[in-house]
Image (cartoon, rainbow, N blue to C red):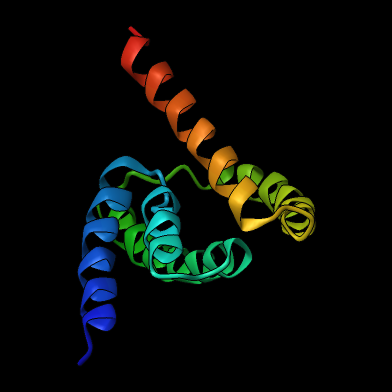
Length: 119
């Protein structure tokens, strides 16, 4: 196995734990990893979503066993997410990888500041 494959599996484990624990989905970790490995912004985001689907299904099964799922809320958020995902996928086609990195960093910093100062 080459180092990139091992790194992706290792990060997949970390993201699986983090996503299942926090509900963040893991893209905030996977996208930077894929960018670091040389993927374009568009390929990083798309590949991250495939991983998130697999991780999310596993986390859903685990949380369902613990009765921690509100299906109505999840489905309603999902319907909105379907619409937003179609818009976002088309928007990223018009953003260079360099600009995407800057936008992504600002979003992550904004989230970090919000979480840090939220009571």
